[in-house]
Length: 265
Figure 1 (cartoon, rainbow, N blue to C red):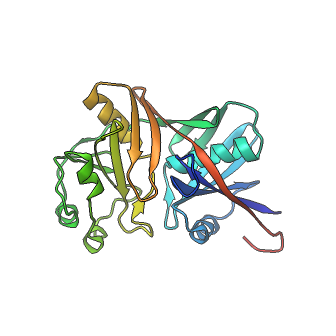
Figure 2: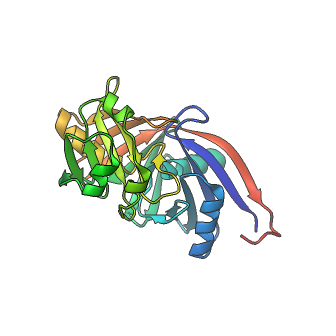
Figure 3: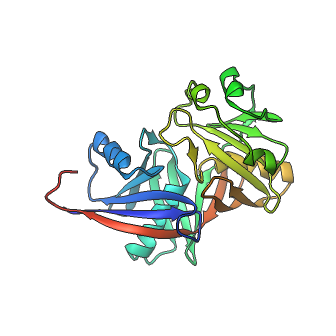
């Protein structure tokens, strides 16, 4: 059969901004090494694959290097493809994932991801991470990811990573998020992954599973606005729900390709 590949820019209302993801609808699961090779070939930060079984949609995410346990922007991109290109008429999508059930609500082509909260806790800064940073954080926390809190937005913009030292870290599916209060939004961040093909992720929805509860507690507010200060940049609408968080944003379709039936996937 033909396999469609959609490429979507997530957490943005403009092409060439936000975080690009590819979305591949499947009628059945392919072998894991095939899924990983497709993600490598796509060359974007994440590729989402989904299979619909009866009334359930099973969703998986792959970087060019590994399968992820959770991915925000590729989930948003998947919801966008199902709504806009596959003409889904409902306003709620439910996905079965490695991180459990994930719900996406849709309102005027804004997508709101209902993700598990991951409140980070205080920890120490590993020496190899400390040596990889040009600026030392005011506070160090950890959940899946290291969360490094800085004084202000200027510090976040000026963070530089020494890649050779950074890649001595082994964080599995995790990474390092640097964050501070924002000048025009409630908080800003950037996200880096050691040993990955792409060092800096343009917009990292899953990192906000930790950022939202942290900043909600710090700022004493449940609804927050956020920006990720990568080169492409991205805007997120955030809400703290206790043991869950809402991560919202827009998406723009870039391209749609079809792999011909006579090509082995």
